[in-house]
Amino acid sequence: MSKRYSAQKMMIEDALMRLDHPTASEIYEDIKKTYPNISLGTVYRNLGLMAESGEILRITFGNQPDRFDINTHDHIHVICKKCGEVFDAEGKRLKELIVEIDESIEESTGVHIENRTMYFQGICSNCREQS
Amino acid sequence: MSKRYSAQKMMIEDALMRLDHPTASEIYEDIKKTYPNISLGTVYRNLGLMAESGEILRITFGNQPDRFDINTHDHIHVICKKCGEVFDAEGKRLKELIVEIDESIEESTGVHIENRTMYFQGICSNCREQS
DNA sequence: TATCTAGTAGTAATCGTTACTATTATTATA
DNA sequence: TATAATAATAGTAACGATTACTACTAGATA
Image 1 (cartoon, helix red, strand yellow):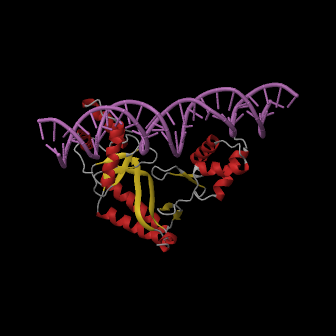
Image 2 (tube, rainbow over the protein chains, first blue to last red):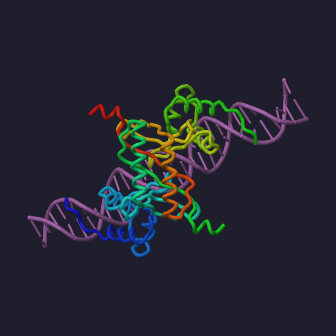
Image 3 (cartoon, each protein chain N blue to C red):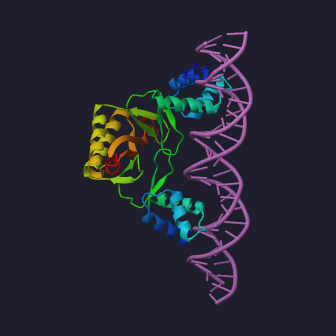
């Protein structure tokens, strides 16, 4: 029942540190460069286990493929609609606002909020300069 | 190029009014009861067109199937984790809070926010009573 | 050193959704 | 009213992300 060391899992952790909010197949393609035998299923299984244990974060952007994040710190994701880059947002004020939203929703619906899913889309400053 | 009247589209609109935040296949199954020849593809195509034209709302809940909403009024969705019911939340305060979140994110990331996706999960008062 | 079993590679299967194609039916027009 | 033009449909194939399955591999354990 004890966990075993696995070279594949280590490669996945390494890829997660090097890549920026990667998808499972981005990780797969990356590892394949140095270890062509890696299996996509192995990548998915390890990511799933890591996400479940809280070691990493699974980010779901609408109907696009899930992305994964080694930064498990509480933060919000923002995607540029043009270049696709993912930005992180955090801060005390943001956290306060979210608590207030929870309260407002609990009051009007009677639902006791336990989880929230949110991400934002817009145009990053880089892309705005190019137009 | 002009749009044509279609009995199928009317049935879909009717189902959207009767059902509560239905998925495409819930609509499909519903219509099939009275019109067994309806095609799932037709349901998807019409829902897609209606969502694109702004006639209805497409709601994406993580990796679950998309749901559709005849209520195009600006509001937030809350799902009960236990019974799956979808609740609507809205209000002036909520809208203000979201504007503030936009501002906070724009300030820290430099991304000019254009769209936001958010939904909340928790336990509704009905389900809380039963435990 | 033999055994046990977590973890893997590779592939099949699933699910929601879109794409494709031959057919049907609604509108405009002769 | 008949007919031509073409939206829209039914039915099915294809797709992309993900999970499930199975035989095999390789660390750990006794």
